[in-house]
Length: 367
Image (cartoon, rainbow, N blue to C red):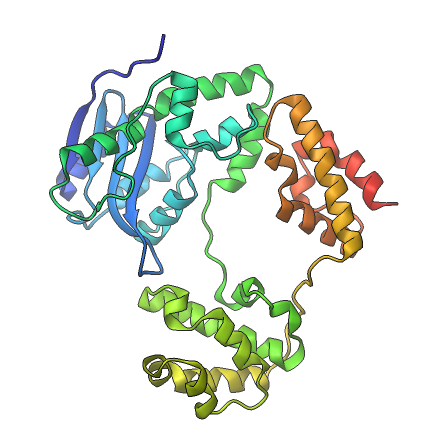
């Protein structure tokens, strides 16, 4: 028989007094989700927070509530368990909107990866798989900033959290039965946090940055840091300030002039940012070059990654969990690079992974 949640009492929370009373009523284990918009801004715009506590679902309105300190205190309380699904975007929203860093988080999507070959199963499919309940998903692209919300939106919002606590209970039990709860806890303690990249480090994420060195790379570092700070301050997508491709072209130019800036950028962009770009270009040109960005892996290194991936896939399949927990491409590539520099496996392969796979990886890398 499928699991059936009790009909929830839906409570709309639109001011600080009601929020304080609602949080006071929260259980020690709650399900949390959020709706937001992110199209023409750097940071997501909060549109709705949903909290499932017992038989109640609280819908918290960011369009009218200004003081979130009482919710922040709850989110950061280590004694309260917060159940989310695919928590990364929610954690980013909590951080950017209310400067909150939730503690004691359980991610149902991530937990299921330790029990199946599905690394990123959707909430609706997980509810169907574990609880045998079908959900309507017809409001995914809805305008969550409109008020009032439609009955269909409210139903969707409630469905997105009402099953989270039951999912937690069943997934935690299965993790304990398969002796993987310690694996999950080890990983979720690192995964359930959001950290913005340091502006001065952003240049490392720019494609083709590895092609530059010396003063060109120093220029790219200065321009990347300037663009990152500007995008955050003005709450604009990076590409709405200056494209990565343009930063690369500026960095490759030894002597940059306003004419060359205008030749690459639209008039409105060059008029707004041209003087700042020239100043940052000069700072980089006369500054100390940073450490070079990692180059793409060599053919020999790619073969090592392929061998390691094959082992990770085999081990994960034998034990019935998602191979991505052992062998995502970026983790394997980082491990190969790290071993080349330091002669040991990267930190990702410490802990529970070391017992499973370290010896096999070291045999490959030490050949």
